[in-house]
Image (cartoon, rainbow, N blue to C red; front, side, top):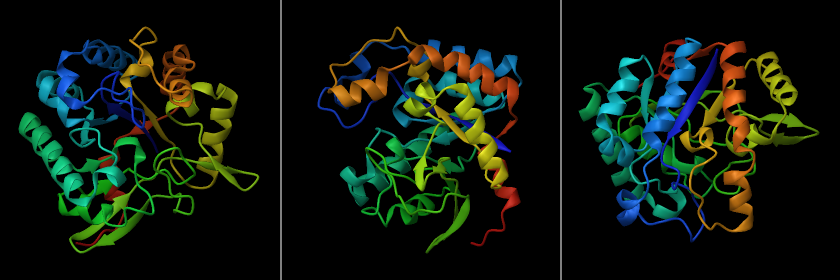
Length: 278
């Protein structure tokens, strides 16, 4: 099984750049999330694909009816925290408060338990050994926060690439890492964000085939802003501008191709295939 995931956030929710607006002005900026989510839902519905949607708590608080619409359509509602914080910058206490707040908002909106979590920017590093303990203590039973390769923010190069159980004081936590493949001893990804946008289809297809041969699922991720090439631009530094804005027009065709050619399940359903404790 493969997993199509959506990190549900606005066009200005970008990390690691001084041009990114602070949370106090977010509500004053142009809103493009509703139309972008509707476009994604239309593509998924047309292909009878269900996705796991990691909702930012701030966005869910602003658009509760849209959260319920996604849930009613059969998509999984999972958490992306509240304020799009990088864990290693926020620190343990602030991170704890943020993920608890985000989870509660989603559960109050849907009336259902939220099982899964993904940290902003896959912001899990060797400097956040406490992160998994906090995620499990907050009540999540699976996590998809690890990018097991070198990355601009986040990334743990020597982390296990396959889904596996992590044991914490509050019980076990299923980790479903972002998909990477090895090429000449180097771990690379073609499966989300800028990696998906710049990789040709034949390379994505080869990568998914390699994952399957190794017994691992393909974890795909996109952001709503990536299906909206006309969204406003921030005055980012060159490398961040490239990663955020290059080849946006490729996202919709690739999303449609993925939906037409691969089967996707919900991450929460993977829990039933793994023996867990606690």
